[in-house]
Length: 79
Image (cartoon, rainbow, N blue to C red; front, side, top):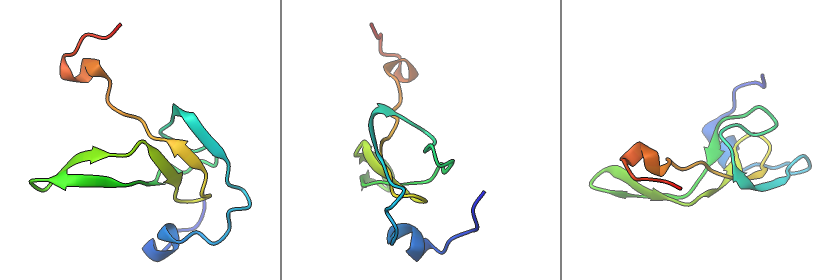
């Protein structure tokens, strides 16, 4: 595991030499081993109301597709 990083370093990656475009299949862990992602989202009544599914690995900068809850999690029938 890599050394801890300051929050400012997570938001401003300086070296993208190992970054990849991994978008397409949702992932919870980047191939580099990091499970922390930079993502955009919005709040309603102090709760996360939505988020974009494109994210960036906080360690290596790779672009990923973030996972979403399945319809089954909400009692919605899926095909």
